[in-house]
Each structure stands twice: as C-alpha cells, then as structure tokens.
Length: 369
Image 1 (cartoon, rainbow, N blue to C red):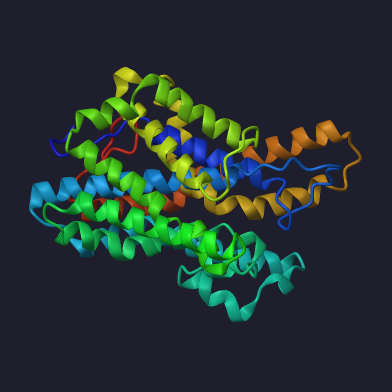
Image 2 (tube, rainbow, N blue to C red):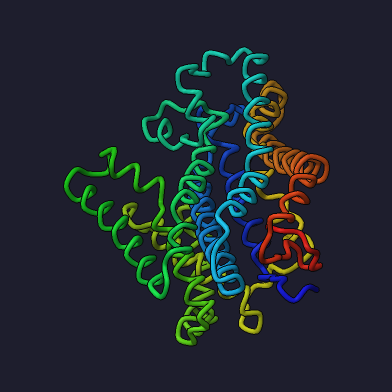
C-alpha cells in the first residue's frame, strides 16, 4: 500500500446502513408509489439515514482535507472540485434524464414542473423540497444538493484557516443550530427558515467535521469517549429504535442527537479494538461501495415495481415481503451495474486528482472515495 494511502475501516459499512435505511423507508413513502398495501408502515428512518450520510461526509471530507494540508501545506481547491464532480455528477445527471423520460413514458409527466427543473440541474433541490413542490421521483435529490452546497464553502475554510479550524467548525455548528432553535422558538415547526435549517443540516455535517479535526489531532479524551463501548451501544440503539419510531426524541433536536450518535458509530468503527459491531465485512463493504448509486436510482425502481406488484391478487403479508425484497434486490443489482460499468471509469479518472490516496475497500485498493 502506498505511504500516503488512507483506509478508514467500517465507513463503507455505515454507508450501507444509511443507504438501506433510505431504500427501505421509501417503499412505503406517500407520493412515490403504491404497492397496494392495506396499511403502510410509517418509517422515518430515511431522514435519519441521510443524517448518517451527512456526518460521514463531513468527517471524511474534512479528514482528507486536513491530511492534504499537512502533506502539501495547502488544499488544492481545483483538484477537490474535480474529484467531487467526477464522483457525483455523472450518475446524478444520468438518472435525472432517466427519471424525466420514465415519468413521461409512465404518464406521470404532470409531476414534472418545468419551471422548477432548474433546481435539479443546479443542485438546489432542497428549496422545492422545503416548499413541498418537489418532483416525487427526484425528491431525494435534496440531500445531494445540500452536500454540494456544503462543498462550496467548507474546503475554502479548511484551506485558509491556520490553527483556528476547530474553533471555526464549532462556531458554524453553534451558529446554524442557534438560528434554527431561535426560529423554532419564535415561529414554530412550520416556519420556512426553521424548515430550511432543519433540512439542510450543515451543522450536522459540522459534527462530522469537528470529529475529524479532533481525531486527526489524536485527542485522547475525544477518542476514548466516542469509541467507548457503552456510548457505541447507546448510539446504535438510538439509531435503530428511532428509525422505527420506538423511542421519542423531540423533533427539534432529533437530527442533532442522531448526528452525535453517528459520530460515535464512526469513531467506534475506525478505532478497531473497541468495536462492538464489526461492519468491516465483505457484504457491508460491497453495499457501502455502491451506496451512492443505490441512493440515486431507487425511486424509479420503486415506481416500476409498484406497477407490477399492485395488481397482483396476493395476501398482504406476502405483498409486503415481495415489495421490500424485490425493491432491495433490484436496487442492489442496478447500483452494482452502475458502479461497475458506468461510475468506475469516472472514479479511475478521479484518482488522477487525488492528493491523499484513500482506500474505498477493506481489500485496500487504491480506489478513491
């Protein structure tokens, strides 16, 4: 393995958990598809899976930027954006075109608000999502838009901060959280400013960024606290129980609680000796590597499968099993095809812009994340 190659174990496993949470929850999401269920299970785990994605992204991007700055004494912004473009844009725009065509062919063209399509083209999808005017099969694009918006400012801050990066990260976290809580207190849950901050969740990404800074500084108190086995157990338990709405956490702070739980799950995985759950396995590694494709393609598959399954005269129990199993199987298969035959060439090109090599696999290849 190359001297500058970095492998953070278990992150693919956490990506797998996040992606599976989103896909499972969206099978019964109103407005996307109708499988003919007599009653829907109301899972909110998709939103919490996205929070886990956000914290992983904030942690990994910040950690790699810090490593680059330590090696090169600066951050190559052009190379950073080249890597992000090659990772995110190809399948993003390909699916965007496929979704538009599919909806028209399925007679759902009225859902396509032509005057709002530019939101999807320019990664601003969180805005129509806030105002409930989104295109159903593209509603999930809001989180990709949020990540792209995060990338507009955070690498610049990492580059130009000297010894104040941790203070800056804490300031951004407190600022966004404070504004969010103020608008909740003053105007309530339906206020659009509150909804914007609660959805966009830059401060949840900053939880990951703060964790990356402290981890890169090898702060023993931080590593010991967040890798503590009881803290890890509590974090996984909160994520699981809240995903099925079996515990109550006030909605105004639920994503913040899950963000810190996600950070403990991350530190617990990369601190191998203290893991309570080993996510560094071949199946989790595989699902984690194709998790972005899973996230992108699954809504159209849900729509297509619902058109097949709904007319079937089958028992409700079997209908549920068939719907979930077929959705997961089709999503995994199509995401693998996308990763293997469409995304891979772009990922190989992306490696040319890597300053710090990373391994996106437990097998330790030189594949960038």
